Length: 199
Image (cartoon, rainbow, N blue to C red; front, side, top):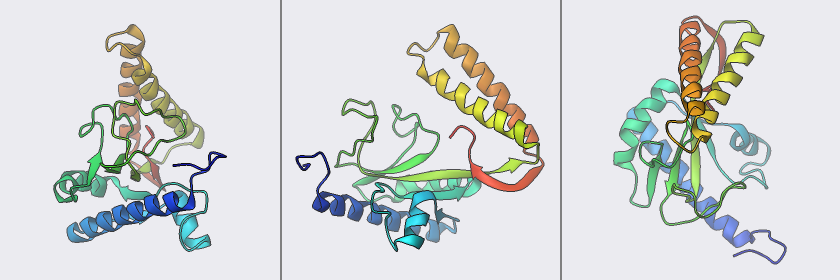
């Protein structure tokens, strides 16, 4: 239900935030049980510090984990989720094409700005879980080029409708090559960490 001017009512906002806080509690319990590192990040962290809760106009919760902890989380969390939540990845929900996971609420509908109700994946209320990697010790312009190129080739590869178009094949080859270059360069990590280049 929305107000006449298209703004969601405060009662609805309070309800979906209650579900998101419960998702964060579930994630925290699983991480603590398995000794996994995690932290709130982005707007969630800013809101916690500046507003002692959500930024008033924010609509999600962002959590980050080092890649090794993230990988372990994806192994253990699906078995430990309550019935109304699930861990969404491109494996658990094949229509979902993001490079990061979400904890989704099965029994709700939460449309993001660019979505319709007909997307081929679950669109319940969510919490984002981002894998964090060390960035290589390389010149900034090389890092910028690789990050942009990896992301672009990965997304353009998925944008083609047919699995075997030349466009999609070229982008997959470019992605695999650039990703290999990134992995080789990552042998010498810098002091910086961030989300994966795909994201």
